[in-house]
Length: 210
Image (cartoon, rainbow, N blue to C red; front, side):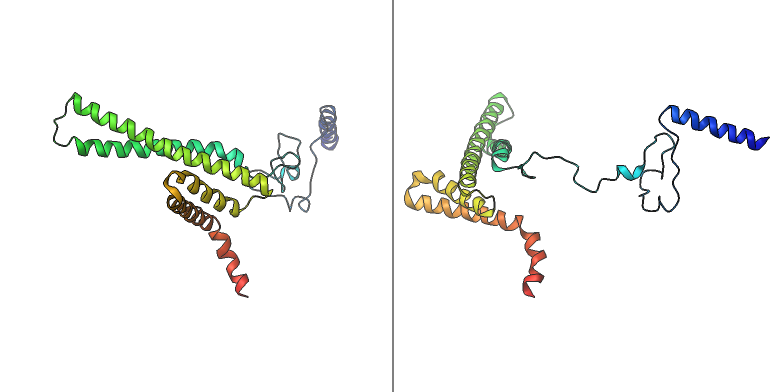
C-alpha cells in the first residue's frame, strides 16, 4: 500500500514536472564531481538549470569585429586632456594660495586680503590648467597622428609624441629652447614607457639571460 502511494506520489510529481517543463534532473556524484562549488550548490532546488552551463571560461565581453581590447589614443585623448586640466587647476590653486598667504603675510585678516588671495588662487589655477591642458592637447594630437601614420600602437609613438610636443611648445624660444623642450619631452615619455614596461622587463630578463 505504501509502495503504491509512493509510486503514485512520484508519478504525480513527475506529471506536474513534465507539465511545467520537466522534472528536476538527477545527477550522479561522478557527473557533479567537476562542478565548482564556490557560491552555489551542486544543483539549485529552485531553478531547473545545470550549473555546469553557468561556468564561463571564455571572455565575458563581446567586442565588435576588428575592435581592440584596449582604448586607442583618440579615446584616451579626452580623458588625458580633461585630467591634465583638472590637475593643473588644482595644483595652481594650491600654489596661488601659498603665494597669497606669503605676499599678504603682513596684512591683517580683512576683506582686501581675502580678495587678493582669491585673485592669486584664480589666476594661478587658470594659468596652470591652461599650460597642462595645452601640453595634453599637443601630446594627444601628435600621438593620434603618429598612430594613424604608422598603423601601430607601441611605446615609440609615446616617445615621439612627447618629443614633438616639447619641441612645438618651446618653439617660441628659438632652436635652443626647442632642443630643451624636445629633450624634456623625450626624458619624461621615456621614463613613462620604462615604468609602464617595468614588470614585463623584469619578467623577461631571466629568459634573456639564458
